[in-house]
Amino acid sequence: MANYNKLATVMGDHQELAIFRRFQRLNAKSLLYMQAEILHLESELDMIELEDKRSEEKSRSLFHTSVFNLKEPCCCPNNVQWKHALEIREKLERYTLLLYSQAQALPNPCRRDLNTLQEWLDRPEGGDFFLQGREADTWNAEHDVLTLSRRQIDRDCLTGMVNDLVIPWYHDLRSRWNKSVRIREVNGVWHYQFESMVAVINAISTLLSSLLPSTSIFVLYFLQSPVARLAAIMAFTTVFSSTLILVTKARRIDVFAATTAFVVHIPVGMIRLTEPSRYVVVSLLSKRFLLVAPAYVLLEAGEDWDPAREHRVGDYGA
Image (spheres, rainbow, N blue to C red):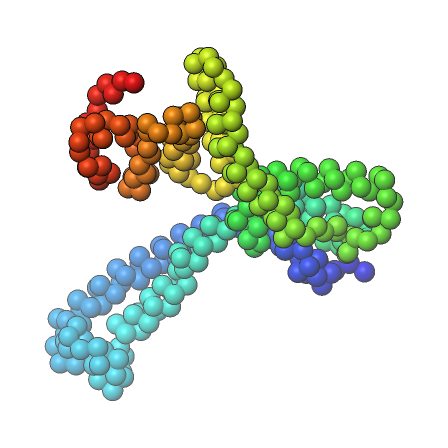
């Protein structure tokens, strides 16, 4: 018989199904209520402090200068100020903005995982509609759910595409050819090893990072037309930047910087391949720039080559 114990087992065995309600509206309303309570308590505490300061009782007049006197019940048995201070402390401890912000920072589950959980709750071999009343609508609010799985945080675009598109297609195709696949489902949920998928994606990323720079130089080497070379550079640059977005979680500024370096790399590779004796490449680590300087200009001028010095810019000629 399906119950919360079975649902907890499924969530424990399949981390991607550990999906819970975020309760954004209720959390915000609760914070607003506590904020209003604390504001009123703060105003009351200011008034009590002023009264104690003006009091003719010596013990009460010392409250604003001595916490010891403020805390000791023997000094003032009916110490309203300290009681208010303790009440405010309790409210502030419950006024957990940090915990609220951390909860809001948790990622949203992908639609496939949420659909899988909803389908499991409805299947006879799964949840079998054991949730009743309002509890049955727990996971219907798609805009107000979160997941505890770090896979949503760590995955990039390519991982998401493989997880959401390729694996379901592969599983459906495999199920059609092998009917026994459905029998090996655990608790009504089919599970693929996430680590194996990540290993395959890492291998693809490594292969692309090796092939793109070398392939671009290889193709440009056989193109003689300047227009064709420029078109090829534009195409390879587009492929490179798109690949960065797919296989990494790089920021826009990182993608821009890496693409700029890639654009510089292509002609540098061509120059070094076709005229290795006339040009050298000076890599400046600062600001991620590459400086290409014709070596023969420095040699003909009789100057020592100093990469740290700013070189003259002019018509170097052939």
